[in-house]
Length: 351
Ligand SMILES: NC(=O)c1ccc[n+]([C@@H]2O[C@H](COP(=O)([O-])OP(=O)(O)OC[C@H]3O[C@@H](n4cnc5c(N)ncnc54)[C@H](O)[C@@H]3O)[C@@H](O)[C@H]2O)c1
Image (cartoon, rainbow, N blue to C red; front, side, top):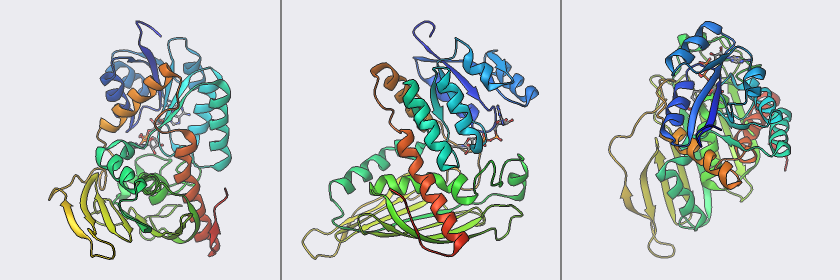
């Protein structure tokens, strides 16, 4: 730590890395001090473009550097745990991109490594930071919708062939860990679970690559039963053309809330027992499409919220806004969805 600022180092100088830089720059108590990439030319250019910070070709060396206090993990998803564990073992805090990792055992190992080293593990799911998301979660927790009956997530994105060819790890089991759900849809899966404040008990699913020549799924449908007894569905795809703005529909016996993009577009509640719910609030006519069709269209406000939160969590020695234990739930559900699609059977989630 220098001049009362936490030194941040980024592993992986690709598409999402500039969003981390924006968030670090926006935080008065944070400073970018280093970056790392196995692609030396790309990494050195990123270092030069961002104030000439230190460059490392090996993340083990970067995490050992005394200037680095916090490590941003922005690598392909299948090596998140390796980077996080190396950082934790070097005594560094971790700020990890979604998905936490793509493997149950590795997620457990990275969470344990951070707890054992007494470093913070803050995770990125920026949709949880938006004001309307926070409002919906609170309303459901307060029972505003009554007894929850359904939670549905419609996650219909578009990714071109060129997108899948843009980096060798995309669309592979080993490093992407899945497709439409594990990469793009994981945001919506996490948000559905978080808004419902519930966990899925069992799932039945179908998944396949319908149009893209990739190992993993480009289209998936899943039928959920929550622990509360509510049902739900997840439809995740990267082959809807042109792609639709994300929609999460939440229903209870006395009301409905619909979240489109990151905005509430319907809030309908019954005024009397057994009455018909009335629209109390309608959202804006146009909602942002976000990354529906473009993986580079990531707004930085969510990352800004989460970087600042992580700094405050370190200072106060409290858990970050999104812990590893919480972030892994979406991945655990997606892995169960894949298992069901593979076996053709209902899968009961552990725990
Ligand atoms: N929060 C969001 O909205 C959001 C958006 C995009 C990507 N992501 C996540 O960020 C991660 C990276 O995605 P991306 O689109 O930036 O990928 P990318 O391919 O553009 O960048 C990844 C970078 O990591 C580098 N790399 C690979 N292995 C490495 C290693 N062992 N050590 C150091 N560097 C290594 C690659 O050379 C590449 O430059 C993924 O996990 C993805 O899910 C999150």
